[in-house]
Image 1 (cartoon, rainbow, N blue to C red):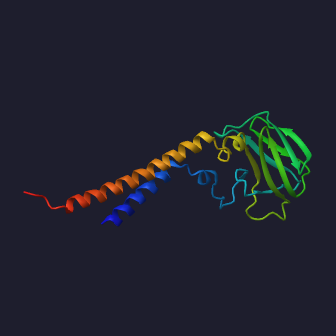
Image 2: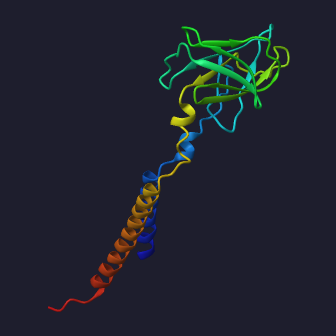
Image 3: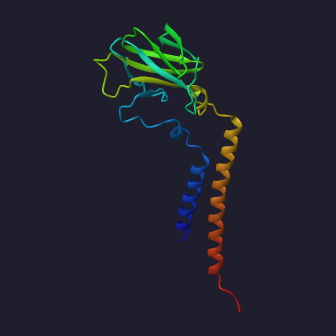
Length: 188
């Protein structure tokens, strides 16, 4: 009986801890797109989207904010390694394009947001290649804060976890004592 209560208490404790500790890794990672769509989004650090150039060697894309609103007049820079290849400004629809781009890996930056894309010629692009690149302004900074941990948050989280574990142990001990008391014969 004691072991069942202990296991139940541990399960409740682990479930509580799981709800209280943010699942940063799960929130930061999004599943890769499985279907070919019109836009490749540079959101995952471990995945470099494939982009297909037009027949004329043009690379295009769009810049928007986190709510999806397009940003007009944003400066967009195309780099390969540390070398700046070209720069342009977005139009009223938030679109930009670079002419005479060759296949390779490029960084596209706008403000403090950077996307890394693998660019392919029209004939050699894989089926998963997208037609344009999407830069979401502020995504690098606003969604990249999972690595920066405030020491106060660490102490608070540790204290809460310790309190939950100690509560589970205390409940288990109380249950054990109640069982022992119930077994003591009562005098009339």
